[in-house]
Structure formats: structure tokens, C-alpha cells
Image 1 (tube, rainbow, N blue to C red):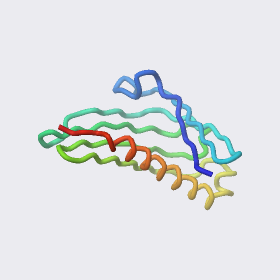
Image 2: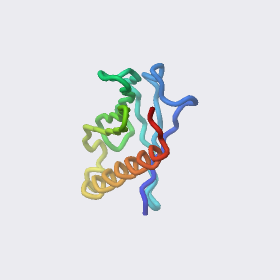
Image 3: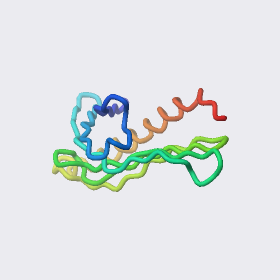
Length: 130
């Protein structure tokens, strides 16, 4: 099975006015289904330190009802000739069944992150930078 993680993102995406917005992640792996609420805590879209650079991203925190506690940051950096996508998180297990299934949960988390990176690579393939 391929893990599937989606989120109810507001129309127009996540923009600077999105701070405080609550999103619901929907996690699916085979027959297992979970929802996981998160709140956007920080959003940025700014010129980078060098010529032709741009940085954009957001951070969210897990809310009560999420299987984990902590936060995650997703950042995209554009340079004149490259695109860098970075995902960082600090998390712990918030629910008893997540602690019980810890090895499987961490495995699933790694699979989901790898899938996110693969999707980002595929999305960046046709990108033509000035």
C-alpha cells in the first residue's frame, strides 16, 4: 500500500492570511483511516538573500485529536538554477495506539514524507526558472 495524506486546504491555498487556520489532514494506509487536525502557525513568502532567490513556506502545529503532537514546517526555496524543498518536524506520539504501534507509525511517517518529496520532485520537473 502507498500511504495517502491529504488536507482540506482553503481555496487559494495557504497564504500569509492563513495563520490560525485549522486544517484537517486525512491519512489513509490500506484499510486504516485517520483524521488529524492541525493549525497553521506561520506563513512566509519573501525574497531570498541573493539575486533571483525566493523562499516560501508554512508551519503547522498538531491539535488535540491528532495522533501525534508537535509541529512541521514545509519550505520551498527557488534560486536562479535550482529548487529546494525542505520538510522538518518535531513530533511525539500523542495517542496510546500510536505509542503501541510506534515502529509501524514511524515507518508510515517516513513513507508519507518520502511520498511528499516524490510529489514535489514530479511537480518541479516542468518548472523552468528564469
